[in-house]
Image (cartoon, rainbow, N blue to C red; front, side, top):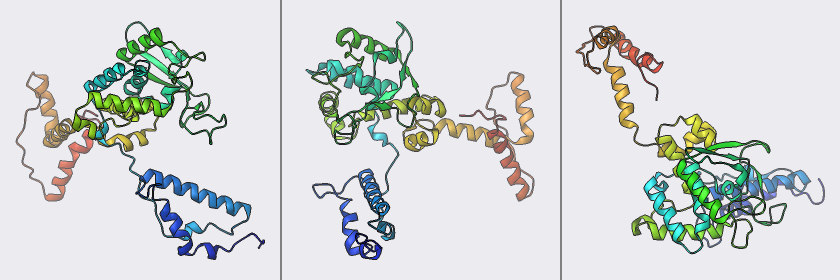
Length: 349
């Protein structure tokens, strides 16, 4: 063992490591940190110790031996943050009325209507727009400029353009641009133009748009457009919640999940896990379909279909009392449901 290598047993002592791990769960002011923050800080701490092991300063990672778990991170979007179209229009109008809000109306609009992430909206360029005079257009996204901080970016700036999240450097994500958004984007180009490199949105001095600037504008717009109770609630508290509203709107409009995932830049698995609680208003239709599948016995299907071809109304209920033994009755009841799910007499959602 080298002179600079300490035995794992020394550092595995809970009195040494546990206070450090417990500190990860606190903010700078001593209050509990968000679960996502704690999880991220623990991962950083773990990787730093792994690097010490790689350099030979430790014989193993002692964190693995400590029984400590980060709080569970909630991935699902809170439905209370999601705004409807009327509220979105009120908020965009409020942004327009603010002293420096005019140039950023379209910035917030692309997040609400096309589900762009803030970093994608910050780096949106004129060459990415396909805006016909009428009807739907498209946005061809290929770069994003998330805020990383000067200490962590190679260019020593707060934002550094890079590829889209979870995508390769040359990949493009095409998202729909509704007519209302197309109108706002054309108005933005006519009134405010672009930066020399083609970016639609800029900071006060022409540089990259900062989180602090659009965050202050959004807070002021919420206070102006929403009621006192709505302002105090989580409703659209962050600009990122506009993206949540867009994805939720697509899902509740009946757009298939794979298509929504493609537009939003998610996998289908992540999409349904994150937005499951925001899908509303479909329970009644789902129950109606299940009732139709369960109340029509197998041997009556042909008779129902024949009656309907003679012009009898759909949904005619039929009295039916099973006369088989219990095991056979179970099979008879399950039959129409299982066959219906496969597509026979059952309309897929």
